[in-house]
Image (cartoon, rainbow, N blue to C red):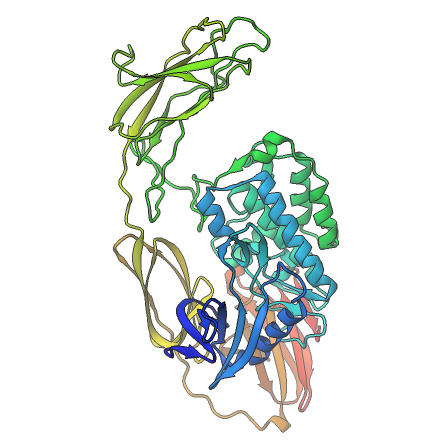
Length: 589
């Protein structure tokens, strides 16, 4: 959208684009301090769904935690929703900015999301795509749910084809990948909240397949790692809440958002557990879930717009409670670590006697004899960050207690740490997608360019899933994963093949239609023993009336085959489902 004004709103900047809409930040022409988010329909074919999103937002306007609709209007040929501007970050952005959440914060956010969903569910509206990027934390810490683009109301016409998945695979319930007509979206929303809470507590997703089919299979046949194995000090009662919400069988989950909310609120969080902060998993790539390689002589780099300080110098020093004379402290765990530090400021932490009047003396320096070392005396806190300015190299530190009567304990055992200053690495690269025929180009499931042969963007480093769709081609959809590296161009070159022109089919009045589907998709179709060239499930055949033997062969499964006989009716519309996973055939399901 190149215009400066859209209706009465002045465009400030484009902030995103998805498969359904382009998104802009704007201000009102006459009220400059009134900021709004403008969503402009990208595909006119989705007009009805776009109107339904606006209608749902209007219906849900009574709840303060749902992003409110301000205006719905047409601008030329474009349909526009003006929505409330939220000054804050998405949940995943907030987690990155804060280095993880405390257990108490994660529980609070989950309760707020469930309270909002309970309100929506009572109005028979289901979100269907709850995930961290659709939950926002405003500048006051309030929780808001955004993006009702694929939400469904009980009264909606069926805008989603039966058996078609809708949502984000990492957060979808198992039954959501191939939804039946009687699917409960209350229970899929609960599953998504459970997965989001797991992510908040553990800093990583429970299932990390490389594509939606791998994720689906993991969810169908594997159990997630218990959150307590990744988040220490997690109350068992809260872990049970998470695992119940993520149960494979819908009947085993909480049966309402209110029930799950009350279960979380009933969990007693001890102070230590409530304050436990969970940082994202540094041993696995956040996007791919694959283990990161680590050379013996190097340290992992955390890329960011600014240098990130990892302060890992933590020791514990204590003496028996109630003793009148401080005792020689002992460390609670082996301690000999390396610090990746861009500010040259290590952190020291120890546990000391809480007796009134006790202070501490800390020494650190470049030699184990501590000659000419830095000394900090009279410390009343058991945690300290050193002054900036230390150079690369090995350092040593020790601490002792000084009682109110002036008596001093022996020094603790000497501990070592290493400073290695690492400059911030470049974090941007170029992504270039080229196609041999005008196609729709998606990056990370967001439509980035429609009917185009080229898409190029500067973006963050990391792995990206590319999907390109061309309905005129034999393949229909091509997928490729590319990795963007700093200051380099990652290329995805997509090529489609196209069938030769086919003769016109007989008039519809003299034929019948047969929709052929399979689980999994991609099976080759035979009619009366003749292979239908370039046709793979799902596909709708146009056939002359009469009895037909329909066969499907799944070559990826060792040429597994299923067949059935069906009578094609003049002007009729029938369907057949070959379920290779259950070795069954369903007619007119």
